[in-house]
Length: 445
Image 1 (tube, rainbow, N blue to C red):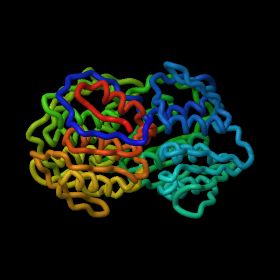
Image 2 (cartoon, rainbow, N blue to C red):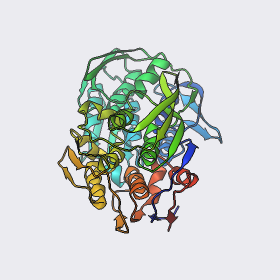
Image 3 (cartoon, one colour):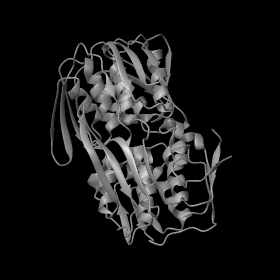
Image 4 (cartoon, rainbow, N blue to C red):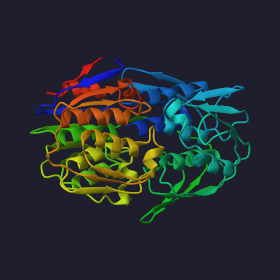
């Protein structure tokens, strides 16, 4: 793929049916859990992106046999605590925070040192948040800064722990849950609400888990197991990838779109809740449940009279990956929108809250940003003429790239957007799907 794309025209009206790529969160969790099973597992519709390939490479280094076929991925599990670990092994998580943090939970039993590395962006992210609870199990760590590289040396006798997770990080919570798989006794987690794919996997696999909840927290009790059965799974499509096309349709004139077979897990659909509050025309059709996960087709129509929002913080965790694209809707709204308690956005692949403000500035939209909040002064008549806008040097954050592309197509202008290969991380078919939608014109250079 070329290094950058140029967009010079707004998108024309369209009426299409599309499918986006498989859910990234579920794809990675399936690979990690299936690696601990005894027997052969298959996943259909697995996401084929760099984050998934990084997961596969790491698992292969640990002795797991994996084959990617045309329509499915086949994995031969090594059993609980069955990784084959060579001396001085190094695992490269690439750009994937989900992989890096979750796999550490499966490595707390390793008698040999394992070094975890990642790309420039991932290496800057906070790993102390996961080191602290895993130390409680008995694992030891070597690291110089809060990020990567780091080394882990496991323990032969892990101890169950009690841990309070107060950041709303599904990655930290899930890593602790994976560490509990082969830990005798009962592990207890009080976790600020976040996406719950790991809990649903545990329930479906009949791993001993008990969950009680109140308004702000989940109280999770887990017991270790000795054996895990193979996991056959049909992976639904990704709501985070769908978000870009939801907003593209809503902000385009006289357009309609149906997105098929999307995961609408309650802990992931904050974007739909927020955008509906802002007056967008979004409808869930053909709802069903598969292995405890909710799935639906999503129908979107062009929206007029978009309303501003004082976004409730309780929706933050369920929309944490979608706020950049939500900010574009606020830019078109009537009135001032306010989003608060978003410091976690700056712990992503790039400082996304800062980049959200930058994109709004390029659009000429007034905003006030702090270290954890942003006010957006919407303009219902927002439109760019021939202004030249260049997007680059954003640590190759795939969501910055895709948000910029959507902004160029709905607001106009003359855009040059660098690092188009960043989408390989999570949504490789993004530009190909755009090409299939009538009226979306861009040039790769």
